[in-house]
Length: 291
Image (cartoon, rainbow, N blue to C red; front, side):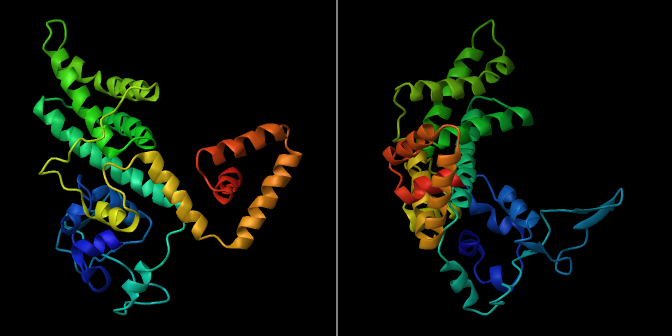
């Protein structure tokens, strides 16, 4: 919501807006993010404000033309649409580590895919939907450990390597492009085994960070150079700050009971010790094991 507010201002609480008004939510547009908010009814659409042709019925199903739909944020159940409502909503503490991690991963994948899209355009490389989804899954997994900038470096390298492969007589452009998902995975496997990934890859001038990036940076100091494992660990710390002491005691009791009654108490204790060694607090380690 803070990222949307930065783009559309007072209309977030007291008006309606088009999808195009918040295209700079991420480097790769706002469609996926607005769609999810709309599906969850965090954002609603207003038929009375939309131009003619926005809504149609096909085979008994209502269809909405996203480009002309008018979206709005429904009033808070307790605060309504008063001028101070948005400030109070923004002042609420973040405590859902999983939601924060997933939002950051969603955004970071879009940031990496925007860079990859540009690199592919330089080499006339194109993918079908299935391949794009496969690449996004690989990137998302990589971002749990590495930074956006490190993933940009991988995208630059694999698209360049695929372009070189396409120039060989026994390879076609299509066949060479199809090797890119595997090349990305191999780069991540090599990094896992000690190969260095450059973390100084700069954002191209035309490649915006997006308003979601600005919120992550202002609230948590996260940017394209922050490694994914550091981001996720940071969000786990945010969760512990928002949990009442009695909840911690309850979680600890559950952990002890599960450990005592489990088939392998020693393995459970070893797992707990491993989490502590990775840098988690006692509270966060317990919460990880009982969630």
